[in-house]
Image 1 (tube, rainbow, N blue to C red):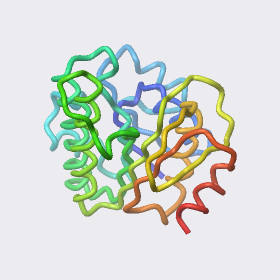
Image 2 (spheres, one colour):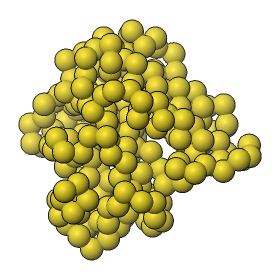
Image 3 (cartoon, helix red, strand yellow):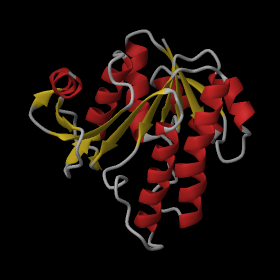
Image 4 (cartoon, one colour):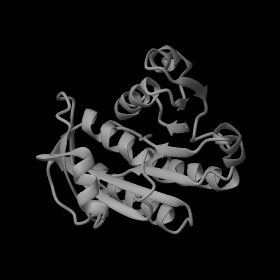
Length: 216
């Protein structure tokens, strides 16, 4: 399997890269900064310099061509202004979507956020972020691809527990980035999660059991 990850130097992306590469999958990690290439290689990924905010969709399509799935793990980050949340969290996600369709990549996994189902009004940074996520999610849902949207709650750098709660209805909570990466890893191995929005937080069920309970 070849998986292209946009935002390949992000905390979840690097964890997912390690998981995929450890079982022999090929990972193309799309990064903006060449200085981050060694971090990607250290996790077993292949760094590809591709700035989603600058590159044309056709250029991104050339990068992801031949992949079995793309994962949108990019983001403007908490210190960014409202404009970058739109150009990255919304427009970057839809550009990757256009690229995937052009390159005939069938699967699209989106890392979204709890709250995107009902984003608040206002120009405060987090409100803009949730609206950007909501608009990107809407585009993914209308894409015709085999998509899965994962909406975790508050992210932590605690060690993963391998135990989660997964639901199709919104709920709040916290979850280690390790466990978000593990859920994405498990989803990439399954073909029964298309056209699903999954809310994910820390819980008591092993990941595969939590997915089985929700998807079947």
